[in-house]
Image (cartoon, rainbow, N blue to C red; front, top):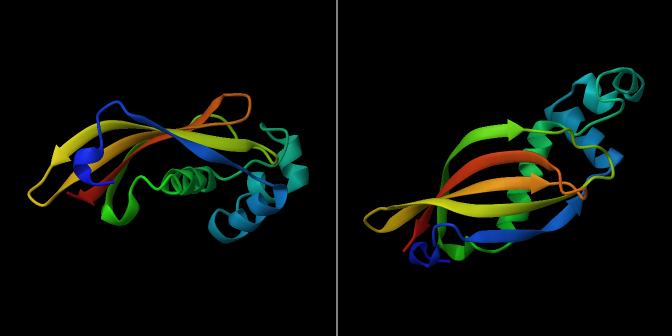
Length: 140
């Protein structure tokens, strides 16, 4: 979509993605090697009562699902920022995630504009697990 096609308040709904134990541990082994993501025995004895996904993985999945809507299309130039990142609830193996992306700000530039969306990620129980503001430079 071109910058002018985005409207304040518009909500995009994404498809979903289910995180498996394997995807959680593979991601964590490379990017967030902490016990709550890798060590089932320690994780089960801990606060979350089992392995949980890294918040960074939840954020990455949220971004992936948003991009897959195709709203940015060929007009996207680059990301410009992420703000107010919140890891709200743990994500467990088997959780199916989906995202609602609401356009919360539009800033016009000379040949382009900055579109800011609030990504809100939910599990299959409709519990919000993640939120964060994402801004991108989009051509007119």
